[in-house]
Amino acid sequence: MNLLDLTKSELERFCIEHGQPKFKALQLTKWVHNKGVHDFAKMTDIQGSFRDFLSQKLNIYIPKIIQSTKSADGSEKWLFKLKSGEVIESVIIPEGSRITACVSSQVGCAVDCSFCATGNQGFSRNLSLGEMLGQVWAINYLSNVGRVTNVVLMGMGEPLLNYSNLIEFLKYLLLDEAYGLSRRKVTVSTSGIVPFIDRLRVDCPVSLAISLHAANNELRNKLVPINKKYPLEQLMRACRNYQDRAPRKFITFEVVLLDEVNDSLKDALAMSRLIKDYGVNAKFNLIPYNAYSKGVFKKPASEKIKGFQTKLQELGYVTTVRKTRGDDVEGACGQLSGIVNNRISRVGVLEKSEIAGLF
Image (cartoon, rainbow, N blue to C red; front, top):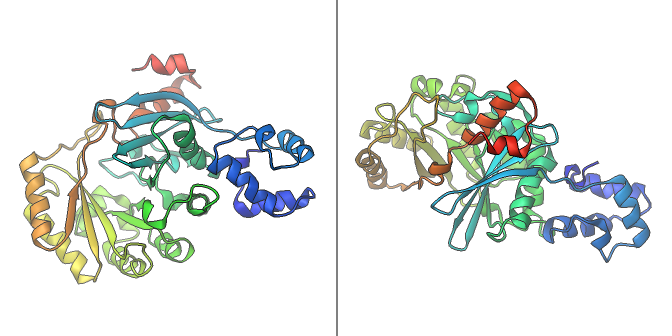
C-alpha cells in the first residue's frame, strides 16, 4: 500500500489499528512530505519495531520521472510514468523566489475544450491522491530548483471532476507538517463544474480560477462544452458566492485568446459586462493560444493581445498576459504526454529509452 494514497485520517487510523498513538501519523507526514524522506529506516524518532513493521506494510511510491525537458526560459516539463504505465506531466515554473508547480489531476480530460491538447487525447481516469502528491514531492525533492512555493491545478484534467482526491490533496498542501502552503498560494483552475465550485467553497476554499474564454453561451458552448450543462448564468452565481470565502476575495478569469474568435474589443467589453452584471470581483489572466499539432485555432497578433489587455485595464480590471512559458518544449498542457500516451495505446507500455526516441 502506498503511504501517499492515505488521507490524514486514514493514516491516523492505520497507526491506531496497529497499536500506535495517533500522533505517529503526524510524525510520518513530517518525514515524508516536509523532509522528503522515503526510507522508513531513516525516520529516527519512530520506534525501530514500528519502522520495521511500516517497511513490511507500506511503501512510498513516487511516479517515475521518464523525461525532464528544460525550456530556454527556465521552465521545465516533467513526464511521469505511473504504475499503470500511463504518462502524465507536470510543469515547473521558476520566477525569482517563486517556484510554481503546475500539477495534473487526471490522465487526459473528459471536458474536451476545443482548443486544448489534453482534451484532444480523451479521458482515461482520475489520478489517485498519491499520484497527485507524488508530483509535488518529486519537484520538491528530486529537482534542483528549490522548494515549491505555489501550486496550480492547471495541468492535465479537470480537478473538480476528481473531487474527493482533490480535497485531500489540498489538505496536505495546506498542512504545516506537510507542505505548509497558504490558501493564496494554491489555485484550482476549473472549466466551471458548478456543484463542485459550491462544495469547494465550503470544504477547502483556495484561490479559484475559471476558464472563461467567452461571455455568451453560444460561443462558450463551442469552446467549453461543459457550458451546455452549467451555463454562464449558473457559473457566475457560483463565482459570486465563492468570492466571500476566497483567500483574495476575487476570482481569476482565464481567457485563452484565439485569433478572430474571442479576441476583439467587443469581446473584452462583453466579458466586463458579464462580470459586472453578477457582481463578481475579478482579475483577468489572458493566455495567448498555444498551438498544437491537431489544433484548428491560431494565436492572435501581439497588437490584438495588447489591445484586449488595455481595454480591460481601462474598464478597471487587473489584467495580466501570461508569459508563454515552455513553448519550445511543447509547454501547453497535455501536448507532450498526449504524444506518449497515444503511442502507448498502440504499442503498450514504453521504457524510458523508447520514450526518448519519440522526440
